[in-house]
Image (cartoon, rainbow, N blue to C red; front, side):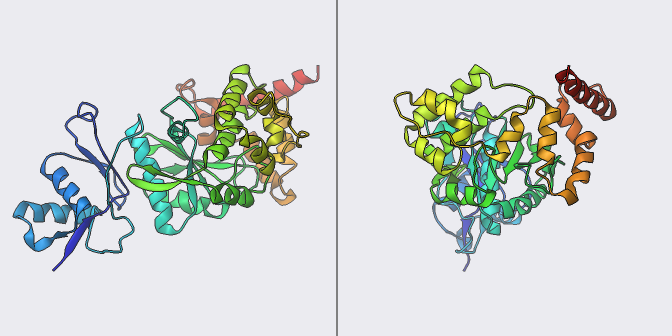
Length: 374
């Protein structure tokens, strides 16, 4: 006699039937595919599988058919130890429901493969009361440095494509970008976070030890605690854009998120080696607090502070091992088509070929360097 339960890499109730047509439930199978919308008998049957084990001998003919369909895509299992069993279906929380499923997918894939990962930034900040904005255009993940490539490979099986980067194979790059594919949601898998002075592994473990549990589309996973998350968000707001100075709006965002999180951000910023980049924001957020002496800028931040992209890349290249430097320099001067389009903003330059974009970018860099010396 077989007993069955619901399994999924993510599921949520649709509170407003006008949002997704007549769909009542959205579920994500545990085998590579796209989300399924359920309505009527399939939705009711899946809910029954969630709330209690079902004996296959008690099912009607149509329920037997549904069970077979669910099992085939990984939405039902007879194994009591299946790690993807659902015990509760949450209501959707993100304004972009598919983005919530992407978060649950990332966490589920990481758990199944024994990889260490956390969801960072985005709506998770709003859930913690750290920002008012409820939606983000992509999903950000922070993985242990040794797990980044494995997680990117798993997501490739679900439709994402890894984009080449200047700094692939070096310690300069802080994340791997996965193109959005059919899901319409880009994923950034971080190996570290610019502005944190600890080495990549120590930084991840320091944040992960203090992380809090949060649910995304009925799947529990880790997210930085509010203090650490505020520091991450503030660093994101303040990160130097090559050749541009930080504007007052960015500084104001960083000040506000730190202020909301509280004065514990000061000591934690020093623990993480992030007090140098955050010094003006910490001063603005806690004007009555006597800040310790400012920390030095981490290497992963200081190269971004150069006055021009040319100088920034030159400074970053000096941090690359000599054996890899020539190869990386070639990528910086003449990047792949995918990287070029990403850098030059395909939405603005839709009609131009990657070759023309590369030439334009190269001449712009040369002009910027020459103008700095005159």
